[in-house]
Image 1: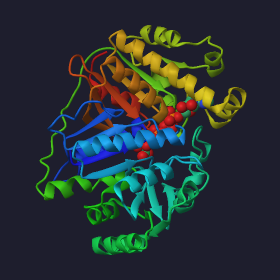
Image 2: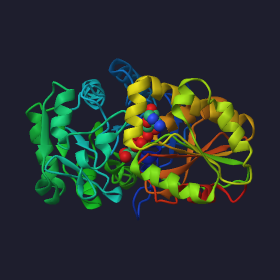
Image 3: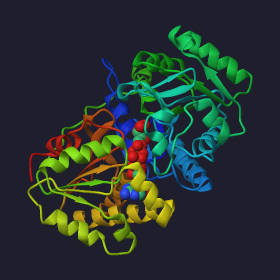
Image 4: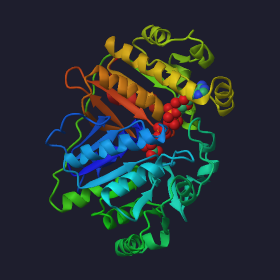
Length: 428
Ligand SMILES: Nc1ncnc2c1ncn2[C@@H]1O[C@H](COP(=O)(O)OP(=O)(O)O)[C@@H](O)[C@H]1O
Ligand SMILES: O=C(O)[C@@H](O)C(=O)COP(=O)(O)O
């Protein structure tokens, strides 16, 4: 393998796996697979990029660091020449971390300096200008992310946010430097590395900026960012003749299907509302889950009673409802009960022969994908066609594969759920 990615959640992992597999014309992408956690076996020999999905975004910091270092060691053992630490394009984290502490541990392990920090993903409106992160025309802190149930983002200045998470130096490379070209970025980063600065927040407002940065860091041992930062990286290896690339196979299959949504983001709530207009939908009563009155069996019962349709079960709720529930039961308690509920639901569905599951929400996807992967013997996930920007179809297992779509809460068009199931296969 040439590029190894350590992703702090499962939706983020499939987002960057999609970018690496697709690459950019005319060179195309790399032969890529996504792994549910750090594998215990060597990677298949044909792979050129491997993405390890961790559930470290909201884990205790020490656990996140330990899991990330274990992932790093495995990737280095597979021969990776470049490591990417993938976090959210909205820099989802808390004042304690985990982006700073994990980034720092990886940089020290790889002896890297002036490590690029670039969450920008212009295709979905995330741009970084003067160190400030925007979601379309809104500052991060006014984009809705300030209400996130687990990682509310109330400061749009990424230099300041990262500065709170690490004792190490945080520098900045401004957009004017990036738009001046590859050499200009390379010199700015070299100057910061010479001064011993560990992190360099690099502005990017367009794909062209990301390609410029990508070329300037062709030989960097460690890069951190959203999936956008990977845009120009496959072609560095293809141009050097080190990678051949691979076509993504179209995978589609019939069989029963279900949609599980745990994200409370505005985009997901819109998708839930639209889907519920025409398809059977079940709103999970979270207090009843906490009381043990709503269980995975309840959800599966509903889904099974609508076989042949596109049933949706969701916990997604508006910020005031989420706040009230968290106040009553505790943020972590609600999160772990909902994760367990969705994971068990997925496990039961796979046991019943469900082969197409669409999931909305990063934490939710982590719980579901881990459960499905365990049920299938934790195989490498193949990257299939892109449904909407940042969300590919994933295929798990060679015998009777399960198709998954792991959608970041904020991603996807309003009709994402129907579109995903159509691409996964026309079957019911
Ligand atoms: N109705 C609800 N009330 C309170 N918290 C909720 C509710 N539904 C979901 N959550 C919490 O919101 C989190 C959403 O996180 P996640 O799945 O990562 O979505 P996103 O991709 O939008 O970040 C869940 O892990 C869960 O803890
Ligand atoms: O970079 C992104 O925005 C996504 O790849 C991502 O990390 C999604 O996280 P969630 O919104 O928690 O699903």
